[in-house]
Image (cartoon, rainbow over all chains, first blue to last red; front, side, top):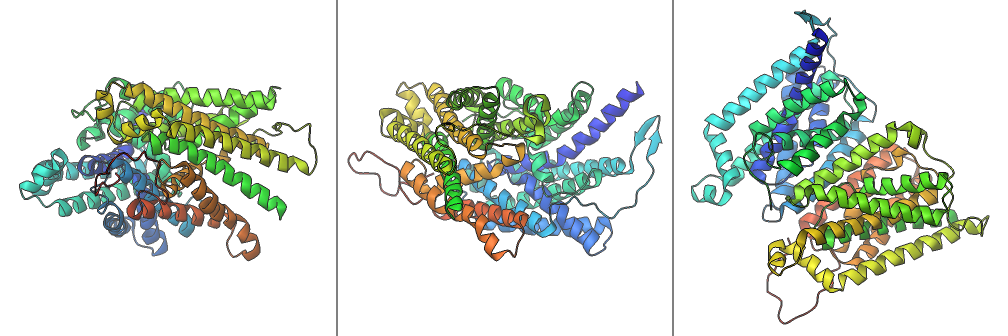
Amino acid sequence: MNHLGQIVFNGLITGLLIALPALALSLTFSVLRFANFAIGSLLTVGAYAVYGFNVGLGLPLPVAVACGCAVSVAVVLLVNEAVHRPLRRRSSLMQLVASMGVALVMENAVRLAAGSAPAAYAVEVARPLRFWGLRVNHEQGIIALAVVALLLLVAVLYRATRWGRAMRAIADNPDLAGVRGIPYDRTVRLVWALSAIVATVAGTLIGLDATLNPLMGSNYVLVVFAAAILGGIASPLAAVAGAIALGVVEELSTLVVAPHYRSILAYCVMTLLLLLRPSGLFGTRWVKK
Amino acid sequence: MSLYLTSTLVLVILSAITGLALNLQWGLGGLINFGLFGFYMLAAYATGLLAHAGVPPLLAMAAALALTALLSALVSQVAIRLSEDYLAIVTLGFAECLRILVTNEEWLTRGVMGLAGIARPFQGAFGGKAADLVFLAFSVVCLLLVFGVYQLIAHSPLGRTLRGIRDDPQVVETLGKHVQRIRWKTFALGGAMVGVAGSLHAFYYSYIDPTQFTTIITAYAFVAVLMGGRGSAPGVLLSSFSVILLLEGSRFLNDQLGFMDAAQLACLRLMLVGLLIVLIVRFKPQGFVTEHRLKVGASPAGAEPV
C-alpha cells in the first residue's frame, strides 16, 4: 500500500512539473490563438539562464531564478516584437511555423553556448525526509511548494485582477475586447512575460529534479502538449488539472510498462482524447475549425 | 572531390524529395506535418528490415512506401477534423514515439547498434567505382518520378480542389467535395513520397541508426517549401538545390577551415535554418516562385497570402 502511495506521490510531483509549462502553453494559446512550439526551448533558455547566474556568477538559487526570469522575459518580448507581433494578422499556421523556427534558434543557441554535456545547479544534497512512510526528496518538497505557490499566484492574477480580465476578454473575442478599450499589445506582452516566468521556473525545477541539458525542453514538448490537450488547451487552469492527471497516470503506468515508454503513453492518451473529446476533459471550448 | 560531390548531391536529392512531399501535404493541401522525420525513419527502417530479411531491394522499397502511406493516413485521421495546430502536434508526437520505439525495441531494430549492410538496388550488376554513380542515377530517377507525380496532381482538377481546401475548406465543402477524404488521401500520398526519401536514405548509407533521424530533416523540408513558395514544385526543387546545398556544403567546408568542431557546426547550421524559417515567414511568405494558377479573368487586387 505504501509503495502505491509513493508512486501516486511521485506522480503528483511529475504532474506538477508538467503543469507549469502546460499552463504557459495554454495561456499563450488562449490569448494569441496559436500553439507555441517554442515553449520547450523557452524552458531550456530559462533553465540555462538560471544556471548561468547560479553556477557562473555564484548567486544563491532563488536570486538566480529571479535574474533568469528577467533574461527569459527579455528574450520572449524580443521574439514577440520581432516575430509574432508583425504576424498577428496572418494565419495561426504561419505563427506555428515561425515558432518552430524560433525554437530551433533558441535551443541551438543554448547548445552552442553551454555544450551538450549535462549540468547541475549548485545546491547542497540533503537527506530525503520521511512523512508517514512516504519518502520525500528535498527537491520534491521544493518542487511542490514552488509550483503550488506559482499556480495560485497565476490563478489569482488570471481570475481576480484587471490584467487577468483583459487576458480573458482577448481570449474570448479580441475584436470585442478592442472595442471596449482593452489594450491588445500590452496584454499580449503581459501574457508572453507571464509564460516566460512560468517556463523559467519550470525549467529550473526540472533541472533540480534531474539534470540540465540543452534538449530538456524539447523532450518535454510532447508531454506538455498532451497534458494541455487532456485538460483543455484553450483554458489555462484546466490545462493544469490535465497535467496533474497525466503525471499520476504516467507514474502508475510504470507498474506495467517500461519507464521509457511514458511519452508513448502520453501520446496514446492524447490521441484517444482527440478522437473522443477534443475540447479536453475539463475544458469547455471546442477547438474545431 | 567526386566523392564529396556525389554524397552531397544524394543528400540534396533526399531533401528535395522530402521537400516535395511536404509541399504536397502542406503547400498544396494545407496539412502541416511536423513529424516528417518520423515517416522518413519509418520508411528507412522498413526498407532496412525487409532487406535484412532477404527481400529484394526494390520490393522492400515498395513495401516501405505502402507502409508509410498507410501510417500517414492513420495518423492524419486523428487530427484532420480539428484545427491545424493539432495535426502539428499529432505528427510530431508520432515521430517522437517512433524514435523511442526504434531505440528500445532491440529485438527488432537492434536499437542504437543500428542496422548495417542494407543492400542497394542494382548492386550486383555494377560493382566498384560505378556503384555510387549508379545509385545517384537511381536517386535522380526517383526524384523525377516524385516531381512528375506532384506536377500531375498540381495541374489537375484535384490540385485545384486541394488549393481550395487549403484556402477555404467550407467553400469546397459546399461544392459537394468530400473534404476529409481528400485530405487524408493527400496526406497518405505525401507520406509515400517521404517514404521514397527514407528508403533511398537506407540504401545510400546502407547503415541506419536512430540518431540519423532528427528534426533537421523536418526543418530542411520546411525551409525548402517556404523558400520555394508553397505549392510550387519547381520552386521547391530550386530552393533545395541552392539552400540545402549550401547548408550541407558547410559540412565539408569545415575540413578546410577547422575552427569549430562538428557539434558546434551542427548547432550553427540549425540556428541558421531556424532563422531562415522565421525570416521567410516574416518577409517573404509567398516564397520566391509563385505557384501555378489558372488565370481566369482579373485576379482580386491586394489579395494577401495567409
